[in-house]
Length: 263
Ligand code: HPA
Image (cartoon, rainbow, N blue to C red; front, side):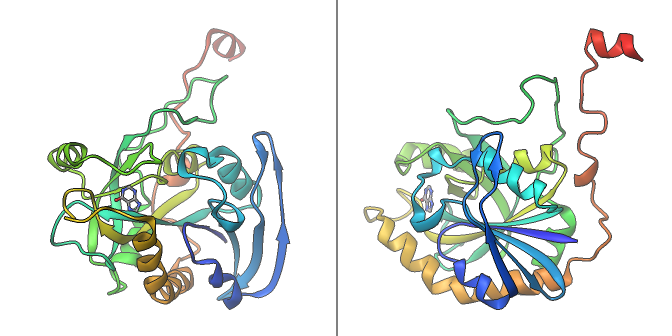
């Protein structure tokens, strides 16, 4: 089984735990992938990719999500662990906490959101994050629990009114990078789970002006815990899936007239 890691801000060091690191860049139908590191960890093949590319070059709305997910699929990845920095929209969830989303609200606006422009495919995302890997994470003792991930277009932070609205709609944490990544992984029938590092209180929950320095500082402080959690999770992911992620395309495609005539 091959596990993919999509690293958000600052977990590149996980590569150092692996044996026999090999690096490559894949050409995809959507452009070049970021540099990918391939290595062995706990006798599993691991493919690591930095979402924003080297040196955090791409802002959230410019990340080439299609190239990233296509590249992981074509490297044989079956299960993806992603990391995302988020702001907390509730006082009880604090900077430094790790949270696993079980659902999302997608407020992105200008991103390409599907691989299927020339076929009519409607994947089911009732449960967008892999239940089997979430169970492993939730029993690790390192995450505070689950919640609803709100994805905004960015790159600006939210207004106070937006945060109040997202809260009323059921959002727990807010970030800019979780979508369309989770949906694209589902379209490619890969299990996908996110581990969110709470880097700050969201706008208006925090009395202070938000800065990217506090986001990076908090993520940096959690880096070793996050890397340990990812490593432990990889060791525990069983070869056998008991989730439905890899049958996502079953019953999802509309048979167009030409395809029906062929049957
Ligand atoms: N809002 C949006 N994205 C974020 C935040 C936030 O408060 N913190 C880290 N990523």
